[in-house]
Length: 121
Image 1 (tube, rainbow, N blue to C red):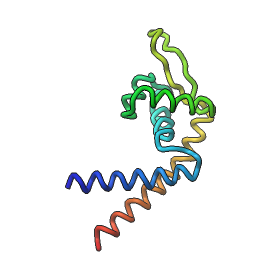
Image 2: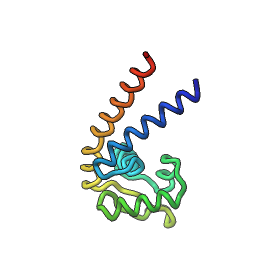
Image 3: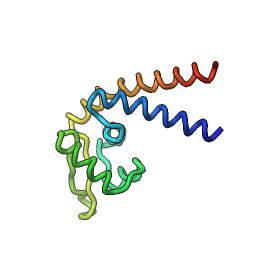
């Protein structure tokens, strides 16, 4: 049922968030790094990143500022659009994403196995 699905998603997000917090990262930060890594040039327009994250523009701007301060992303102007800005994954950010991905995978495995064991009882 729909509510069960939403509940399972919330539990999975909580489990992943806990795993990431132990590594000093947040879920939104990881999502930015992952989205950038999966993009063709390791970059996305800030507007597209905002849309992909489903967050408002000011939240994404603050998030990108934090990642920029840690050296994980950098901002670059869009050559064809003077108002546009690219968010670019740095080598530091790619290394961080590689470190965090197994943490996320392990947390998802735990969450799924916990959900299956509770639903089978």
